[in-house]
Image 1 (spheres, rainbow, N blue to C red):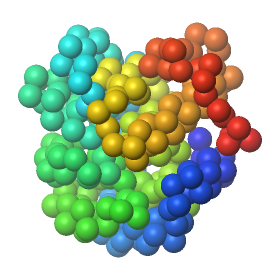
Image 2: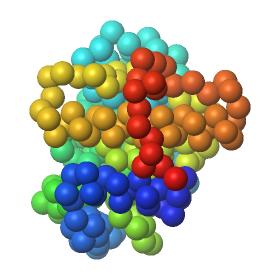
Image 3: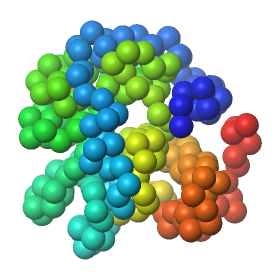
Image 4: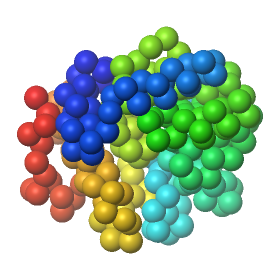
Length: 235
């Protein structure tokens, strides 16, 4: 999915949260200035054509490690990478906006793991401090705003659904979702609204993949949610 397809959803998200596009653009430009040298091709090399587990750091993750290890490739989301490493589960790609366990980005990029670092209006200090500590040859910059040379936007809003969109964009054969909890009642109201958007965007991605790949596409993580989703934001 390219930004032109995703932009109407982005506009709806901005309106819902009262975010400003200009702050995202400033964050994107800070990230560009730090010269990340990774690319989407790096992720395609490890995810393309494979059964990909998009692994979130939910409370069920430790109980779902077998499902992670059965996947052909592992795309870790935020602090899930730390849990996987503690259990000696290899991570093939990593997605983060540096809001949790920011030290993982330098560590994983130094190990040549393709690492997508996301810049948005609220995390510029983290971007400025963490990205220079990374092996930037293995860092792909991502943004919520319009992409520019060196920073991509393939869709998605939270780290988790953005990881799913990234895997889809680079040709993942199938997607599974260990460690996800779209009904986490322990989060604050803002995080709950973000999870609601993640759910909607996953539903859009599921529908889009089904249109392209056939009826076999089914995201188990959405079971019990589809009937309640309002997807009017999507053209």
